[in-house]
Image (tube, rainbow, N blue to C red; front, top):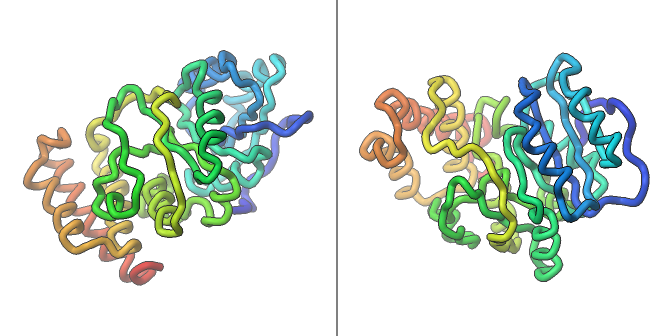
Length: 292
């Protein structure tokens, strides 16, 4: 998971090792980070560090991070020239000092008890590789964290912002596949891929509704067609990589066209979603072969 394009910036935090490392990959944003940074200052559990992987070409984050350091928060600031979420998160995980990792988005934020609840949950489940918290705005039902459900794409929601994973399990599983996710041609599906690979290795995950995470709720595919296509290509890649059942693949290709209102898709978005999934499926087979 080493990132040759990343370099440390500013002071590396000193002192005892933290219990949680929050790996924050960010680009193109500054004030949007303020809710997260403020929420970190309000945590009842303070034994954590913030590992920022900065993909901006300027110093916009420096005035935001310095007050955290001044307040005694452990902060690492890494820079990565290429805008690529998976590589950024892998680089942050490599630099992290804690045994537990989380990957908040740069426009998400935590409630004061979130980190304490995550640590308590995994202390109560020592055999678990990680947990899935509760995305408050999405208000989804409890996920089904078993392999058969995920291979049917019926596992429910396990968004990146709600994942807390033991660092050793993350490393043993190879981290995020940087062929997937924002910045890659297969522009989505990286957290689903992480869970599918973990569950395929008999990894155990638990649902923790007390681990409450806030994030603006996107209920539809993003408006730009290029971004919609990229995310859908990531889903199509999962169909091929994990050899999902044919009926699951067919459902995924047809559902955007037959049931666009269910996902609040416009006709253009529905067509882009279906086309992107087909593109991703065929391209993964062509480039990597099934299961590669």
